[in-house]
Image 1 (tube, rainbow, N blue to C red):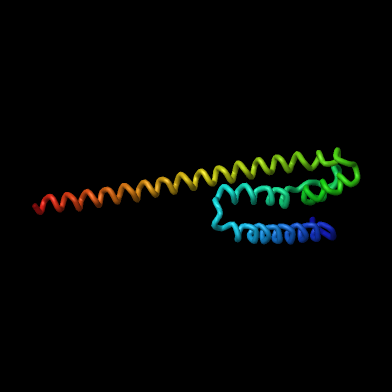
Image 2 (cartoon, rainbow, N blue to C red):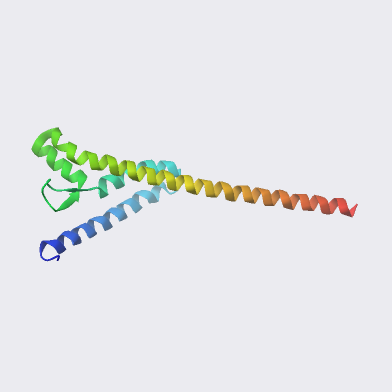
Length: 137
């Protein structure tokens, strides 16, 4: 099935994806103390540019990163060549942003619930201590 150029195509994409993940990890490391929303706003566009695939030519079966294809099409066709690559980039950006926002909201709800449980347990402990003191008198 994958003979000749097929294997090299998948090897190149595997290497490209691995390097992209390493770059994202390196970008995220200095931002580890930053707000999660800021991390989301800065890393999602980078991930979108790196990982959105697009066919090299409309009738081609080979895929490349959409940002690179757009650069080559701008050189060949001018700004009108950019439209074909811009649509998948925008859709990928919106999709990744929705996924990221939903994950952050889920995490924030869980952390709020944990904080509420901790505070309610503290109140219960204080009340039992006060009750014990009143019984001793």
